[in-house]
Length: 425
Image 1 (cartoon, rainbow, N blue to C red):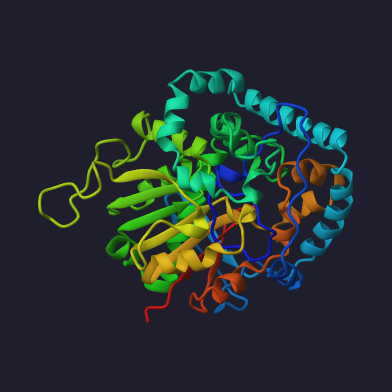
Image 2 (image 1 turned 135 degrees about the horizontal axis):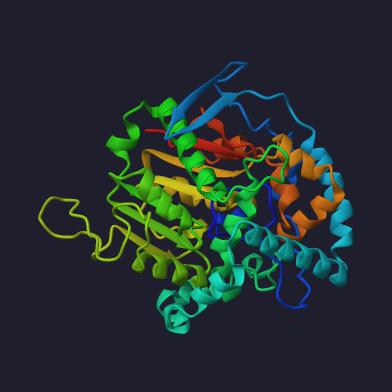
């Protein structure tokens, strides 16, 4: 999927998103060995893990706020040993998954479980995917979506196998399956036992992100900041456009929303989704919906408020200081360490960076870390999981040049949202 800021991973795969959604391979090709961790990554990974709950200004208080029908609780949690447990489990599982037959078995099992779960939800995985495969001339769509210069400079880490696809995100299978996979994977997100299914889990998770995002931005900049100052938005690691669509819904006054991804396959699918309106799409979502930003009566963005571009998160194709909000949804756990500079460069003074991803300190995450079988299945689809679990995201954000106050809020029982602002001067 694209990628913004992480400083504790070896170069990691990028976007897609919902990127929490994973799927195993369709053939027997073993996954390439992940690239070695850089010296910077080793240093950051060795740092004490963040509690993942408190902002720089919080101490021990908690409160809650209701927006859009969901309740976001803000609470400071005690430090967790999850990172250490995850590290130990990762060593064991990493050794196991070096054997191709075992990796293939783990990833195949994960894929079969997702397809079964989709069926339990009343979703016919194969029919949905096949319908999308036959929807258009995908090779032409791919040619139109591909930026040859970006493709030629695709970093090696992005060409590796992850999400259990041998081709990573550079193929049609991950691009065509990501939306149905997101429904299946997130169906248990709000389940207390991790087993009860809710077909609305993915929708609730994305709504939870924007509820928490609103709380964090209000806390830092005041209640009017989102309506009065957010006009240009970049969605890094947009995948098939699921996260971009929800940004359009959350920021109806925005005049330009651009989704970027390193996979031209995902960009092709996102553009197809933009051109094929469906029930429930937010106002402003669609082809030919232009915006007159300067008031001269003409469209200022080529006919579309929303667009998608083949680009890398560490090389954002925007002028310095031209973006009001950079968002990253379910991508951070896959990203490289050099995107932070690109994000803060593109943001205007006072602009915001927000992200939502897994919360390594959450009890649901700890249950997986403490179960070697569950962790093996998870690790087969998320090869950089342990680096992310040990990363102090707040410190990474501050080190990139953002303000010291960084808001961290839960967006689901398994996910957290982080909000940071670029200094005004």
